[in-house]
Image 1: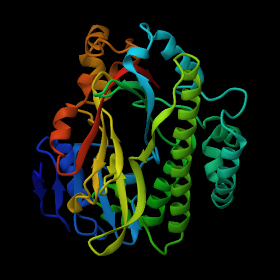
Image 2: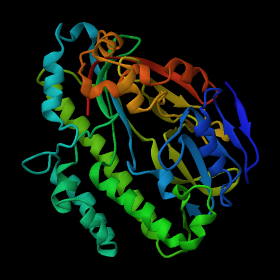
Image 3: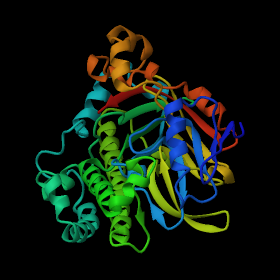
Length: 399
């Protein structure tokens, strides 16, 4: 489906790939479009909804500046998926032991590996030097995360909470996939919060001229710009490593529960909250994707539905007006508070029927009814991606 709506009135237009965008999200997008360093236009993906800092589902091209709150605090949050050489018929009749094994292998929520890092020393060494440089220049970051030297390492290969998950899925050929959603954990959160506040301080009295104080930005050439670029890249690398190492631990756990298997599709590991330098419309730009994935021509991507709904493995079409992007998921239809008020355990059990997962009040806010219909989201982005595989989960582990 082509662009559904174009907002005008800002420094640049906003091109929206859905007719299902709430007024608060449209207002946030209009605010972003007023900034003087936005290049060409802002793009909004089909799962667009109001977010903290900036609109979720927004693709923001900037020239000479970055908005830290648009990247957000779960820097590098994203997905990884891999296909196994197993068929549905080879799975056990009862999947509770499989879920239990995954939960034992990967700490969830606020938990971390208790006895030391849960990853090889090589993974720690690859990240340690970069973090040391960042903290030496910005020692306040170390004070924002309790026991930082231990915590960042022991949170590698852990899931986190909120909408993060691990799933065992079946595709249209009844082949088994493992898929998970996570980001840069506590260390990414403090890096994000630190630089968001630093951007506000650096703007000083000019902050009052912005349509929203969350749109405080760091300008290229200014005191802290290069430090932020280095820190955000480090956090994105951390998130990528976190997902890779979680996948390794999950596959080890599954090897003790399932028949022998190999990987038949190399793992797809992609961010959907991040910033990168890319070339679009003849210019090298900072592309911030807040709740969007890169969908350049031939790029593999993962678009998950809510727990109990379908998910998709896709290939990008490289659509220029989207800045080679697409939706990162279904997108929330209601807030977590609204979901808790509207739904109960019986609703959750009904909406997740056939899925081995938690069905208690602790995950009510992640009920499928709180999200947009993933099939409608996919229908709105047929110009952005082609579907390679359609997945349906049979096991879901929530943070």
